[in-house]
Image 1: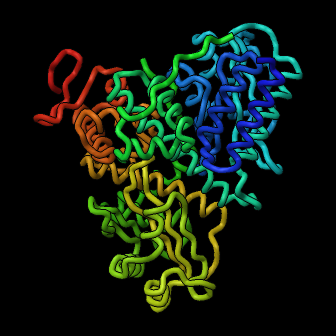
Image 2: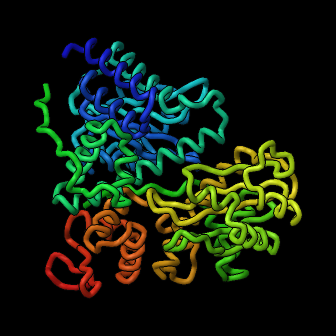
Length: 247
Length: 253
Protein backbone atom coordinates (compact mmCIF):
# COMPACT_ATOMS: atom_id res chain seq x y z
CA UNK A 1 0.00 0.00 0.00
CA UNK A 2 1.34 3.43 -0.85
CA UNK A 3 2.01 5.66 2.08
CA UNK A 4 -0.82 8.07 1.30
CA UNK A 5 -3.30 5.21 1.13
CA UNK A 6 -1.99 3.77 4.39
CA UNK A 7 -2.34 7.15 6.06
CA UNK A 8 -5.87 7.63 4.81
CA UNK A 9 -6.76 4.12 5.99
CA UNK A 10 -5.20 4.87 9.38
CA UNK A 11 -7.09 8.12 9.77
CA UNK A 12 -10.31 6.32 8.95
CA UNK A 13 -9.49 3.64 11.52
CA UNK A 14 -8.69 6.24 14.16
CA UNK A 15 -11.82 8.22 13.31
CA UNK A 16 -13.80 5.00 13.56
CA UNK A 17 -12.47 4.52 17.08
CA UNK A 18 -13.81 7.96 17.99
CA UNK A 19 -17.37 6.80 17.50
CA UNK A 20 -17.81 3.92 19.88
CA UNK A 21 -16.07 0.93 21.42
CA UNK A 22 -13.20 3.24 22.12
CA UNK A 23 -10.26 1.55 23.76
CA UNK A 24 -7.26 3.66 24.56
CA UNK A 25 -4.71 0.83 24.38
CA UNK A 26 -6.11 -0.30 21.07
CA UNK A 27 -5.90 3.19 19.56
CA UNK A 28 -2.35 3.67 20.78
CA UNK A 29 -1.24 0.23 19.58
CA UNK A 30 -2.71 1.11 16.20
CA UNK A 31 -0.80 4.40 16.26
CA UNK A 32 2.46 2.58 17.03
CA UNK A 33 1.88 -0.06 14.36
CA UNK A 34 1.07 2.48 11.66
CA UNK A 35 4.07 4.63 12.52
CA UNK A 36 6.29 1.58 12.17
CA UNK A 37 4.74 0.83 8.76
CA UNK A 38 4.37 4.31 7.31
CA UNK A 39 7.67 5.87 8.23
CA UNK A 40 10.14 3.05 8.21
CA UNK A 41 11.07 2.87 11.85
CA UNK A 42 11.78 -0.43 13.55
CA UNK A 43 9.85 0.13 16.72
CA UNK A 44 7.35 2.71 17.88
CA UNK A 45 5.78 3.16 21.27
CA UNK A 46 3.69 5.46 23.37
CA UNK A 47 4.25 6.63 26.91
CA UNK A 48 1.57 8.50 28.86
CA UNK A 49 1.93 10.57 31.98
CA UNK A 50 0.62 8.99 35.20
CA UNK A 51 -1.03 10.93 38.02
CA UNK A 52 2.29 10.91 39.87
CA UNK A 53 3.71 12.88 36.94
CA UNK A 54 5.97 10.19 35.62
CA UNK A 55 5.72 8.54 32.23
CA UNK A 56 4.48 5.02 31.86
CA UNK A 57 4.59 2.69 28.91
CA UNK A 58 1.18 2.19 27.31
CA UNK A 59 1.51 0.65 23.86
CA UNK A 60 4.06 -0.32 21.24
CA UNK A 61 4.39 -1.82 17.80
CA UNK A 62 6.22 -4.77 19.31
CA UNK A 63 5.38 -6.55 22.53
CA UNK A 64 8.85 -8.05 22.76
CA UNK A 65 10.48 -7.66 26.13
CA UNK A 66 13.56 -6.11 24.56
CA UNK A 67 11.60 -3.11 23.39
CA UNK A 68 9.49 -2.90 26.53
CA UNK A 69 12.67 -2.69 28.55
CA UNK A 70 13.59 0.49 26.72
CA UNK A 71 10.21 2.00 27.32
CA UNK A 72 10.17 1.12 30.98
CA UNK A 73 13.61 2.55 31.50
CA UNK A 74 12.35 5.80 30.01
CA UNK A 75 10.05 6.50 32.91
CA UNK A 76 13.31 7.51 34.54
CA UNK A 77 15.51 9.00 31.82
CA UNK A 78 15.67 9.10 28.05
CA UNK A 79 14.27 10.89 25.03
CA UNK A 80 10.65 10.43 26.12
CA UNK A 81 11.24 12.07 29.48
CA UNK A 82 12.99 15.05 27.89
CA UNK A 83 10.43 15.39 25.11
CA UNK A 84 7.54 15.20 27.57
CA UNK A 85 9.10 17.68 29.98
CA UNK A 86 9.91 20.29 27.30
CA UNK A 87 6.88 19.54 25.09
CA UNK A 88 9.26 19.58 22.13
CA UNK A 89 10.19 16.99 19.52
CA UNK A 90 13.54 15.25 19.56
CA UNK A 91 14.37 14.22 16.01
CA UNK A 92 17.28 12.25 14.62
CA UNK A 93 19.18 11.77 17.81
CA UNK A 94 22.06 9.50 16.82
CA UNK A 95 22.75 7.14 19.70
CA UNK A 96 26.25 6.18 18.65
CA UNK A 97 27.63 9.70 18.87
CA UNK A 98 29.46 10.34 22.11
CA UNK A 99 26.99 11.92 24.46
CA UNK A 100 26.27 11.66 28.15
CA UNK A 101 22.68 12.84 27.92
CA UNK A 102 21.08 9.49 28.87
CA UNK A 103 23.77 7.34 30.55
CA UNK A 104 21.49 4.36 31.23
CA UNK A 105 19.20 4.49 28.22
CA UNK A 106 21.78 4.96 25.44
CA UNK A 107 23.98 1.90 26.10
CA UNK A 108 20.91 -0.33 26.44
CA UNK A 109 19.36 0.97 23.20
CA UNK A 110 22.67 0.50 21.36
CA UNK A 111 23.05 -3.01 22.76
CA UNK A 112 19.64 -3.85 21.36
CA UNK A 113 20.68 -2.67 17.91
CA UNK A 114 19.04 0.76 17.73
CA UNK A 115 21.02 3.47 15.98
CA UNK A 116 18.75 6.47 16.27
CA UNK A 117 15.82 7.61 18.34
CA UNK A 118 13.08 10.17 17.84
CA UNK A 119 10.41 11.38 20.17
CA UNK A 120 7.33 13.48 19.47
CA UNK A 121 5.14 15.06 22.13
CA UNK A 122 1.45 14.22 22.38
CA UNK A 123 -0.07 17.62 22.94
CA UNK A 124 -3.51 19.13 22.92
CA UNK A 125 -4.48 22.67 23.82
CA UNK A 126 -1.19 23.45 25.43
CA UNK A 127 -1.01 20.32 27.56
CA UNK A 128 1.41 17.46 26.97
CA UNK A 129 -0.09 14.12 27.98
CA UNK A 130 2.62 11.80 26.73
CA UNK A 131 5.10 11.10 23.97
CA UNK A 132 5.48 8.95 20.87
CA UNK A 133 8.84 7.26 20.58
CA UNK A 134 10.39 5.95 17.36
CA UNK A 135 13.47 3.75 17.12
CA UNK A 136 15.51 2.96 14.02
CA UNK A 137 18.10 0.26 13.54
CA UNK A 138 19.71 1.90 10.50
CA UNK A 139 21.80 5.02 10.29
CA UNK A 140 20.35 7.97 8.48
CA UNK A 141 17.79 10.51 9.37
CA UNK A 142 14.05 10.79 9.09
CA UNK A 143 13.06 13.48 6.63
CA UNK A 144 10.65 16.28 7.36
CA UNK A 145 7.68 14.53 5.79
CA UNK A 146 8.22 11.49 8.05
CA UNK A 147 8.17 13.72 11.08
CA UNK A 148 5.03 15.52 9.89
CA UNK A 149 3.28 12.20 9.29
CA UNK A 150 4.22 10.84 12.73
CA UNK A 151 3.26 14.05 14.51
CA UNK A 152 -0.05 14.10 12.64
CA UNK A 153 -0.86 10.56 13.74
CA UNK A 154 0.18 11.38 17.32
CA UNK A 155 -2.14 14.40 17.27
CA UNK A 156 -5.10 12.37 16.09
CA UNK A 157 -4.45 9.76 18.79
CA UNK A 158 -4.24 12.50 21.41
CA UNK A 159 -7.61 13.84 20.33
CA UNK A 160 -8.98 10.31 20.48
CA UNK A 161 -7.82 9.86 24.08
CA UNK A 162 -9.30 13.15 25.19
CA UNK A 163 -12.32 13.04 22.92
CA UNK A 164 -15.04 12.92 25.50
CA UNK A 165 -13.72 15.89 27.37
CA UNK A 166 -14.80 19.38 26.54
CA UNK A 167 -12.69 20.86 29.30
CA UNK A 168 -9.21 19.60 29.92
CA UNK A 169 -8.77 20.18 33.60
CA UNK A 170 -5.99 18.38 35.38
CA UNK A 171 -8.28 16.18 37.46
CA UNK A 172 -10.28 14.72 34.58
CA UNK A 173 -7.04 14.22 32.70
CA UNK A 174 -5.57 12.37 35.68
CA UNK A 175 -8.69 10.23 35.80
CA UNK A 176 -8.37 9.39 32.09
CA UNK A 177 -4.68 8.57 32.39
CA UNK A 178 -5.26 6.47 35.49
CA UNK A 179 -7.87 4.45 33.58
CA UNK A 180 -5.43 4.03 30.67
CA UNK A 181 -2.75 2.64 32.99
CA UNK A 182 -5.16 0.20 34.60
CA UNK A 183 -6.30 -0.89 31.14
CA UNK A 184 -2.71 -1.70 30.31
CA UNK A 185 -2.34 -3.74 33.51
CA UNK A 186 -5.57 -5.66 32.79
CA UNK A 187 -4.18 -6.54 29.35
CA UNK A 188 -0.90 -7.78 30.90
CA UNK A 189 -2.89 -9.92 33.35
CA UNK A 190 -4.94 -11.42 30.51
CA UNK A 191 -1.80 -11.97 28.41
CA UNK A 192 -0.41 -14.09 31.25
CA UNK A 193 -3.57 -16.20 31.31
CA UNK A 194 -3.60 -16.68 27.53
CA UNK A 195 0.12 -17.43 27.46
CA UNK A 196 -0.20 -20.10 30.16
CA UNK A 197 -3.33 -21.71 28.71
CA UNK A 198 -2.16 -21.86 25.10
CA UNK A 199 1.61 -22.21 25.65
CA UNK A 200 2.37 -19.16 23.54
CA UNK A 201 4.68 -16.27 24.29
CA UNK A 202 3.40 -12.86 25.40
CA UNK A 203 3.49 -11.49 21.83
CA UNK A 204 1.26 -14.32 20.65
CA UNK A 205 -1.04 -13.89 23.61
CA UNK A 206 -1.43 -10.17 22.89
CA UNK A 207 -2.10 -10.82 19.20
CA UNK A 208 -4.82 -13.29 20.08
CA UNK A 209 -6.58 -10.89 22.45
CA UNK A 210 -6.38 -8.19 19.81
CA UNK A 211 -7.69 -10.44 17.03
CA UNK A 212 -10.66 -11.44 19.14
CA UNK A 213 -11.40 -7.81 20.01
CA UNK A 214 -11.23 -6.82 16.34
CA UNK A 215 -13.36 -9.69 15.08
CA UNK A 216 -16.07 -8.99 17.60
CA UNK A 217 -15.81 -5.22 17.39
CA UNK A 218 -15.13 -5.10 21.12
CA UNK A 219 -12.67 -3.01 23.09
CA UNK A 220 -9.34 -4.70 23.77
CA UNK A 221 -9.47 -3.91 27.48
CA UNK A 222 -12.98 -5.28 27.70
CA UNK A 223 -11.94 -8.57 26.12
CA UNK A 224 -8.98 -8.73 28.52
CA UNK A 225 -11.23 -8.03 31.51
CA UNK A 226 -13.66 -10.74 30.47
CA UNK A 227 -10.79 -13.22 30.15
CA UNK A 228 -9.54 -12.31 33.62
CA UNK A 229 -13.05 -12.60 35.06
CA UNK A 230 -13.38 -15.94 33.24
CA UNK A 231 -16.43 -14.82 31.31
CA UNK A 232 -14.62 -15.94 28.15
CA UNK A 233 -12.57 -19.12 28.20
CA UNK A 234 -9.13 -18.58 26.69
CA UNK A 235 -9.76 -21.49 24.31
CA UNK A 236 -12.76 -19.65 22.88
CA UNK A 237 -10.75 -16.61 21.82
CA UNK A 238 -10.44 -16.29 18.05
CA UNK A 239 -7.15 -17.44 16.59
CA UNK A 240 -4.73 -14.96 15.11
CA UNK A 241 -4.36 -15.17 11.33
CA UNK A 242 -0.92 -15.89 9.89
CA UNK A 243 1.20 -12.74 10.01
CA UNK A 244 1.40 -10.75 6.80
CA UNK A 245 4.79 -10.58 5.14
CA UNK A 246 6.27 -7.20 5.92
CA UNK A 247 7.48 -5.10 3.07
CA UNK B 1 17.86 -11.47 31.99
CA UNK B 2 14.55 -9.73 31.88
CA UNK B 3 14.37 -6.04 32.52
CA UNK B 4 17.24 -6.17 35.01
CA UNK B 5 18.61 -2.68 35.48
CA UNK B 6 15.69 -1.18 33.64
CA UNK B 7 13.54 -0.76 36.70
CA UNK B 8 12.19 2.69 37.22
CA UNK B 9 12.81 4.69 40.35
CA UNK B 10 9.88 6.08 42.37
CA UNK B 11 8.86 9.65 41.59
CA UNK B 12 9.64 12.34 44.19
CA UNK B 13 5.94 12.52 45.03
CA UNK B 14 5.84 8.78 45.71
CA UNK B 15 9.01 8.95 47.79
CA UNK B 16 7.39 11.66 49.91
CA UNK B 17 4.49 9.28 50.63
CA UNK B 18 6.88 6.49 51.67
CA UNK B 19 8.74 8.91 53.93
CA UNK B 20 5.48 9.92 55.66
CA UNK B 21 4.50 6.26 56.05
CA UNK B 22 7.79 5.37 57.67
CA UNK B 23 7.65 8.39 60.02
CA UNK B 24 4.19 7.37 61.17
CA UNK B 25 5.16 3.73 61.46
CA UNK B 26 7.95 4.68 63.83
CA UNK B 27 5.63 6.65 66.09
CA UNK B 28 2.55 4.38 65.96
CA UNK B 29 3.03 1.01 64.29
CA UNK B 30 -0.45 -0.15 63.33
CA UNK B 31 -2.45 -0.47 60.14
CA UNK B 32 -3.93 3.00 60.59
CA UNK B 33 -0.82 4.57 59.09
CA UNK B 34 -2.15 4.18 55.55
CA UNK B 35 -5.28 6.17 56.38
CA UNK B 36 -3.36 8.78 58.34
CA UNK B 37 -1.00 9.38 55.42
CA UNK B 38 -3.91 9.40 52.94
CA UNK B 39 -5.59 12.22 54.90
CA UNK B 40 -2.30 14.05 55.22
CA UNK B 41 -1.16 14.02 51.56
CA UNK B 42 -4.60 14.93 50.26
CA UNK B 43 -5.10 17.57 52.99
CA UNK B 44 -8.58 16.35 53.90
CA UNK B 45 -10.26 16.14 57.32
CA UNK B 46 -10.15 12.35 57.34
CA UNK B 47 -9.59 9.19 55.34
CA UNK B 48 -10.66 5.59 55.52
CA UNK B 49 -10.09 2.41 53.54
CA UNK B 50 -12.77 -0.20 52.89
CA UNK B 51 -11.95 -3.56 51.34
CA UNK B 52 -14.14 -5.88 49.31
CA UNK B 53 -14.57 -9.35 50.68
CA UNK B 54 -14.91 -12.45 48.55
CA UNK B 55 -18.68 -12.01 48.35
CA UNK B 56 -18.32 -8.33 47.40
CA UNK B 57 -19.17 -7.00 50.84
CA UNK B 58 -17.34 -3.90 52.02
CA UNK B 59 -15.49 -4.08 55.32
CA UNK B 60 -13.61 -1.23 56.90
CA UNK B 61 -9.84 -1.67 57.15
CA UNK B 62 -8.75 1.53 58.87
CA UNK B 63 -9.67 5.15 59.43
CA UNK B 64 -7.57 8.20 60.24
CA UNK B 65 -9.84 9.46 63.04
CA UNK B 66 -13.12 8.72 64.84
CA UNK B 67 -15.25 10.69 62.42
CA UNK B 68 -13.75 8.91 59.41
CA UNK B 69 -14.42 5.60 61.20
CA UNK B 70 -18.06 6.49 61.92
CA UNK B 71 -18.54 7.65 58.34
CA UNK B 72 -17.29 4.43 56.75
CA UNK B 73 -19.20 2.28 59.25
CA UNK B 74 -22.35 4.27 58.46
CA UNK B 75 -21.76 3.84 54.70
CA UNK B 76 -21.38 0.07 55.08
CA UNK B 77 -24.56 -0.10 57.17
CA UNK B 78 -26.47 2.10 54.69
CA UNK B 79 -25.20 0.03 51.76
CA UNK B 80 -24.62 3.17 49.69
CA UNK B 81 -22.11 5.97 49.44
CA UNK B 82 -18.89 7.05 47.77
CA UNK B 83 -16.79 3.92 48.55
CA UNK B 84 -19.59 1.65 47.38
CA UNK B 85 -19.79 3.56 44.10
CA UNK B 86 -16.00 3.76 43.66
CA UNK B 87 -15.62 -0.01 44.05
CA UNK B 88 -17.77 -0.58 41.00
CA UNK B 89 -16.29 2.20 38.88
CA UNK B 90 -13.06 2.92 37.09
CA UNK B 91 -12.68 6.46 38.29
CA UNK B 92 -12.99 8.72 41.29
CA UNK B 93 -16.33 9.51 42.93
CA UNK B 94 -16.62 13.19 43.79
CA UNK B 95 -19.25 14.92 45.92
CA UNK B 96 -17.82 18.30 46.82
CA UNK B 97 -20.99 19.56 48.49
CA UNK B 98 -23.23 17.00 50.14
CA UNK B 99 -25.66 19.68 51.28
CA UNK B 100 -26.28 21.43 47.99
CA UNK B 101 -26.19 18.48 45.70
CA UNK B 102 -28.89 19.05 43.08
CA UNK B 103 -29.84 15.40 42.80
CA UNK B 104 -28.65 13.61 45.89
CA UNK B 105 -27.48 10.20 44.77
CA UNK B 106 -27.34 8.76 48.25
CA UNK B 107 -30.70 9.36 49.92
CA UNK B 108 -29.80 7.41 53.03
CA UNK B 109 -26.11 8.24 53.25
CA UNK B 110 -26.08 12.00 52.55
CA UNK B 111 -28.26 13.25 55.46
CA UNK B 112 -26.47 11.00 57.94
CA UNK B 113 -23.05 12.14 56.71
CA UNK B 114 -24.19 15.77 57.04
CA UNK B 115 -25.41 15.14 60.57
CA UNK B 116 -21.94 13.82 61.42
CA UNK B 117 -20.53 17.16 60.26
CA UNK B 118 -19.23 16.01 56.87
CA UNK B 119 -19.66 18.37 53.89
CA UNK B 120 -17.60 16.88 51.06
CA UNK B 121 -16.72 13.27 50.25
CA UNK B 122 -14.45 11.69 47.66
CA UNK B 123 -13.63 8.06 46.94
CA UNK B 124 -10.98 6.44 44.76
CA UNK B 125 -11.00 2.80 43.67
CA UNK B 126 -8.19 0.68 45.12
CA UNK B 127 -7.29 -1.80 42.43
CA UNK B 128 -4.53 -3.44 40.45
CA UNK B 129 -5.70 -3.83 36.86
CA UNK B 130 -8.72 -6.12 36.91
CA UNK B 131 -8.31 -6.92 40.60
CA UNK B 132 -10.70 -4.76 42.62
CA UNK B 133 -9.60 -4.57 46.22
CA UNK B 134 -11.82 -1.82 47.62
CA UNK B 135 -11.79 1.95 47.88
CA UNK B 136 -10.19 4.84 49.71
CA UNK B 137 -12.63 7.45 51.07
CA UNK B 138 -11.76 11.03 51.95
CA UNK B 139 -13.96 13.57 53.65
CA UNK B 140 -13.87 17.20 54.61
CA UNK B 141 -15.89 19.30 57.03
CA UNK B 142 -16.21 22.17 54.55
CA UNK B 143 -17.62 21.98 51.04
CA UNK B 144 -15.41 22.37 47.98
CA UNK B 145 -13.52 20.45 45.35
CA UNK B 146 -10.03 19.06 45.77
CA UNK B 147 -7.18 20.97 44.22
CA UNK B 148 -5.30 19.38 41.31
CA UNK B 149 -2.37 18.52 43.55
CA UNK B 150 -4.63 16.97 46.21
CA UNK B 151 -6.40 14.88 43.58
CA UNK B 152 -3.12 13.74 41.99
CA UNK B 153 -1.90 12.70 45.45
CA UNK B 154 -5.16 10.85 46.04
CA UNK B 155 -4.72 8.77 42.87
CA UNK B 156 -1.17 8.01 43.87
CA UNK B 157 -2.15 7.12 47.43
CA UNK B 158 -4.82 4.73 46.13
CA UNK B 159 -2.11 2.96 44.11
CA UNK B 160 0.14 2.75 47.19
CA UNK B 161 -2.75 1.33 49.24
CA UNK B 162 -3.39 -1.36 46.59
CA UNK B 163 0.19 -2.60 46.89
CA UNK B 164 0.11 -2.36 50.67
CA UNK B 165 -3.08 -4.43 50.86
CA UNK B 166 -1.49 -7.07 48.67
CA UNK B 167 1.65 -7.19 50.82
CA UNK B 168 -0.45 -7.42 54.00
CA UNK B 169 -2.61 -10.21 52.55
CA UNK B 170 0.54 -12.09 51.55
CA UNK B 171 1.86 -11.47 55.08
CA UNK B 172 4.92 -10.18 53.30
CA UNK B 173 5.72 -7.20 55.44
CA UNK B 174 9.14 -7.41 56.98
CA UNK B 175 8.89 -4.92 59.80
CA UNK B 176 8.21 -1.73 57.93
CA UNK B 177 5.48 -1.41 55.34
CA UNK B 178 7.08 1.77 53.99
CA UNK B 179 10.42 0.10 53.28
CA UNK B 180 8.66 -2.90 51.82
CA UNK B 181 6.60 -0.76 49.44
CA UNK B 182 9.48 1.44 48.43
CA UNK B 183 11.49 -1.56 47.36
CA UNK B 184 8.77 -2.51 44.89
CA UNK B 185 7.32 0.90 44.17
CA UNK B 186 6.32 0.12 40.63
CA UNK B 187 5.15 -3.23 39.40
CA UNK B 188 6.75 -4.27 36.19
CA UNK B 189 4.45 -5.73 33.58
CA UNK B 190 6.19 -9.01 34.31
CA UNK B 191 4.40 -9.15 37.66
CA UNK B 192 1.00 -8.82 36.02
CA UNK B 193 1.83 -11.35 33.32
CA UNK B 194 3.10 -13.80 35.92
CA UNK B 195 -0.04 -13.30 38.03
CA UNK B 196 -2.14 -14.19 34.98
CA UNK B 197 -0.09 -17.37 34.47
CA UNK B 198 -0.33 -18.37 38.13
CA UNK B 199 -4.10 -17.78 38.09
CA UNK B 200 -4.36 -20.43 35.36
CA UNK B 201 -1.82 -22.79 36.97
CA UNK B 202 -3.64 -22.73 40.29
CA UNK B 203 -7.19 -22.25 38.95
CA UNK B 204 -7.52 -19.27 41.23
CA UNK B 205 -8.63 -15.67 40.93
CA UNK B 206 -6.13 -13.13 39.76
CA UNK B 207 -6.22 -11.47 43.18
CA UNK B 208 -5.27 -14.74 44.86
CA UNK B 209 -2.58 -15.30 42.23
CA UNK B 210 -1.02 -11.92 43.00
CA UNK B 211 -1.05 -12.71 46.72
CA UNK B 212 0.40 -16.20 46.13
CA UNK B 213 3.18 -14.80 43.96
CA UNK B 214 3.91 -12.08 46.49
CA UNK B 215 4.14 -14.55 49.40
CA UNK B 216 6.48 -16.78 47.46
CA UNK B 217 8.80 -13.89 46.65
CA UNK B 218 8.73 -13.01 50.35
CA UNK B 219 9.43 -16.61 51.42
CA UNK B 220 12.45 -16.70 49.09
CA UNK B 221 13.52 -13.24 50.24
CA UNK B 222 13.56 -12.49 46.52
CA UNK B 223 12.41 -9.49 44.59
CA UNK B 224 8.84 -9.69 43.29
CA UNK B 225 9.85 -8.71 39.75
CA UNK B 226 12.61 -11.34 39.65
CA UNK B 227 10.26 -14.04 40.92
CA UNK B 228 7.68 -12.99 38.32
CA UNK B 229 10.39 -13.09 35.65
CA UNK B 230 11.10 -16.74 36.48
CA UNK B 231 7.40 -17.57 36.13
CA UNK B 232 7.16 -15.84 32.74
CA UNK B 233 10.37 -17.59 31.61
CA UNK B 234 8.72 -20.88 32.70
CA UNK B 235 11.47 -21.61 35.20
CA UNK B 236 9.04 -21.57 38.10
CA UNK B 237 5.42 -22.61 38.35
CA UNK B 238 2.70 -23.15 40.88
CA UNK B 239 1.20 -26.58 41.53
CA UNK B 240 -2.22 -26.42 43.14
CA UNK B 241 -2.01 -30.00 44.41
CA UNK B 242 -0.06 -29.55 47.59
CA UNK B 243 0.12 -25.80 46.94
CA UNK B 244 3.81 -25.92 46.07
CA UNK B 245 6.11 -24.02 43.77
CA UNK B 246 8.25 -26.15 41.47
CA UNK B 247 11.32 -24.92 39.62
CA UNK B 248 12.91 -25.91 36.31
CA UNK B 249 14.92 -28.64 38.07
CA UNK B 250 11.69 -30.29 39.19
CA UNK B 251 12.36 -29.37 42.80
CA UNK B 252 9.92 -27.68 45.07
CA UNK B 253 11.00 -24.44 46.66
